[in-house]
Length: 326
Image (cartoon, helix red, strand yellow):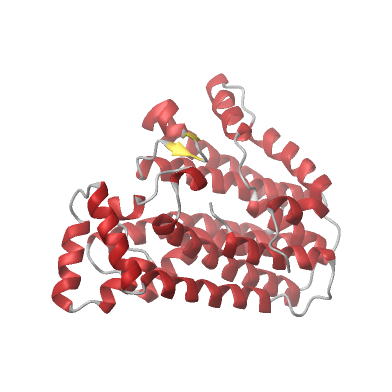
């Protein structure tokens, strides 16, 4: 397959995405002017809309998207947006997608309240689906999104991160919403449990691969491509896979010295030195191997579905993630 762009991958669902966008904007609307101002700013930013796109493609793979599909697509994007607003507060990030973050423009107090508002909006959308299984899955996912971030912070601060916990953490904070989106797509069009389970696993493995790619880009990307500062994980004392692998490879005393270093307020020269050490010790190569492994597992879940343009697009998202620069 030729390396695809997002535009290539969403072309078959352009009309469905327009319907989703209308539902999303309507769901964010409020009679409070400040909420509408911030919501308009969020909507105007050119995000990839990966999660709703995966949901709608999953729906098309199994049937024809309907009103429940658009509600569900809007819901997962609201949940995702809420986590981004809160993440920027936690990370003290001034930029998002190359633009000032909500936190930068409206400060912490408003950003926290807006994130809470978005989570409340997602709950109302959940109820509109009138599907207990979907409600249970979405409620669990909402809990996982927050618990994953807390797990990462806690284990990084106490030096308790290992590879198993790392995978558990990225499942919770990122992959759970990918998996839920894909399964919801099938559920909203009445797909059987065999198909929705495969879609859930596809989303799970793609979501894990997606977060691993994000963690890799924090070491290999550029601020221009990513649209936010790189090296944020090290500065925030967050242990991700490239650094974790390097720590495990180093002799114990050197590993302890590295842990102590990243817990200090590193300057740009020190960050560059850590990045060089990670590359020399094979941390980047190992992370790329793990990324390829989870990507392959994602593709395997689609084997049961007949070949089609929609299936090709879902496969394309795996390759897109492997090759993306932001």
